[in-house]
Image 1 (tube, rainbow, N blue to C red):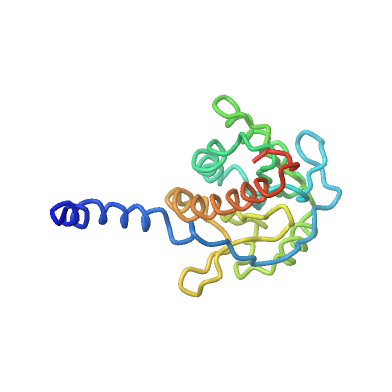
Image 2: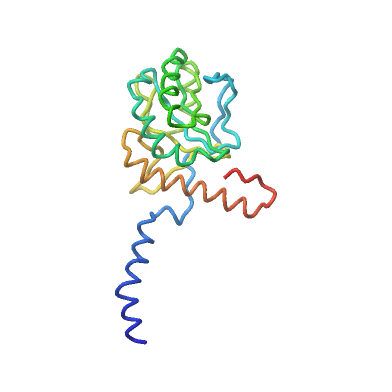
Length: 213
C-alpha cells in the first residue's frame, strides 16, 4: 500500500500538476470586461452588402487601416490560429473595420483565403475615417490607432457588446497582436476558450437556448 502511495506521489501527481498549470491560469476564471456595452456599428456596408451587427454575436474585431494589403499576413495568422478552429460556431463572427475606398483590397484578402477556408464568417465592413475613429475611441483602449487608422491587434467582444480581456496589472491585455502567431496560439486562444465556456455553461442552464456554441 505504501509502495503504491509513493509511486503515485512520484509519477502521477507531477503529471496532474503539469496538466493543471499548462492549461493556463485564465482557464479556470472568467474573462474580465474591459469596456462594457460598446456601441453597435452604424449603417455601414460590408463586402457582401449584408448588415453586420455586434448584437448577440461573439465578435473578433479588427481595424485594417488604409494599407490593408501590406498587413495581409496578419489576417492569415488569425485565420490559421483562431478562425479555422472555431468557424463552425454560428454565433461567432470576425469583423474587420476598414476605411471606405479599400473595398478592392479587402476583396483580395477574401479571395486569397477562400481556396482553403470557408470565409462565410469573415466580414469586412466599411466606414468613413471619422466614423472609424469615433467607434474606436468609445472602446476606451490604451493603444491608439496608427496614422492609417489601423492596428495589428484584434479584440474580443461578447454577445452583450462588452469588450473582454485581462485586467491584471502584470498581464493586462485588451487586444491580441495578429503579427505574432504565438500570441494568438497562447493568450488569445486561452481567453477565447473562456468566452466559449461561458456560453456553453449558459446553454446548459437554459435548455431552451439555441445550441450554436
